[in-house]
Length: 485
Ligand SMILES: Nc1nc2c(ncn2[C@@H]2O[C@H](COP(=O)(O)OP(=O)(O)OP(=O)(O)O)[C@@H](O)[C@H]2O)c(=O)[nH]1
Ligand SMILES: [Mg+2]
Image (cartoon, rainbow, N blue to C red):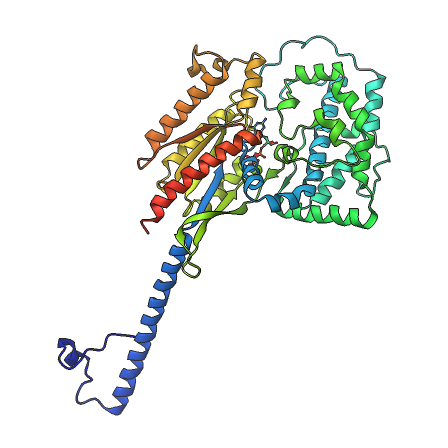
């Protein structure tokens, strides 16, 4: 309702119609006034809605997970979900079975590819992205026998298993094998058809969707036939041969001389074959956290925390916080897609793996992974769009750093600025912590503090403690910010 001045008000005169107004002019004036009133009402309504939205959104925290590919973004998201959305987590559990199985098959095909390359005398160069020089057993001929050949022929059915698992997992599957879909797992293709260049990694647009589908399929198959699916049967049937190949001395040597540390690669489960390559394999929390499924799309997950700072105006009860966590693909070609999510983001957790100082990017083998991570961090800290965003840094994969240093890899060989500092985990983490902190201080457009955690996000117990601390820190900062609204 607009302001209507009375006769004593100075505006009263101004608001009176002209004394010589004709009836047509009066109608036109009234229409004009009505239109103006409608516009006013619309503006008032918009303002009201914007205020209500801002008030509602006071309880929403937008958190973006960033970092290069394989830095551990999705694994961090899994930790959040395992801890704070247990019901959904359990619902998706059976869907992860195919992912773990696919990870196993992928590891075995990698082993076979290496062995066959060695049998054929192919050069042992640039197989993997490791920069670690290939030294020790370079010139010794490896002793591969008919037994190895036989093992590989017996493992050939895994080819069809891989195709079928990818088909089941759905969109994004890269059909790198020429094996026809109709081939049953028991038809034995030539072992040499397993030989090929390093395959592109299987990826999906959103693992949330495919897991929902996949767990439905798994459930319905189980319910309908109360039987085990063909892929699980084939994998179980190949268990002993997979173990024999993986544990073989000549195979281990072949991997070693190509600088391949399969144990440290994403989605490694070959040491768990006894438990996983079985008909009744039950997926554990730890398996889910370790399973590798590359992200190419954006995934949004929502968590709610019961206790928020505001009372719900309807019930009078405290209304909780809602966290919207966005997980994106970290591969170089996908990074342009990050930009739209910078708008209004409250928190960024940036993951930088500390164990990658001797590795190159898979998507560009000229670029050192640690260097790439530092460049990314610098641009995030410098972004004016993110000037008010709280930055949290996870110096991740501390366990892999420990293993690498134990193997005798020297940091200063790849990072000359590391100098003569001790070649130990604590010292490396401290050095990198200072480096990232300095960049953050120098490049941030506004003053902000750095929250830095050394992490191993596959260690769910330790990560739970970190997440509690992150949660409290984020809530504290955002409470202060939202009180200003
Ligand atoms: N050993 C070890 N493995 C880790 C750690 N963090 C992540 N991983 C593993 O590394 C692999 C890659 O992790 P993801 O979380 O999928 O990486 P991402 O950053 O989401 O990668 P993209 O989706 O390609 O951007 C997975 O198999 C994880 O289990 C860690 O701290 N230690
Ligand atoms: Mg991911």
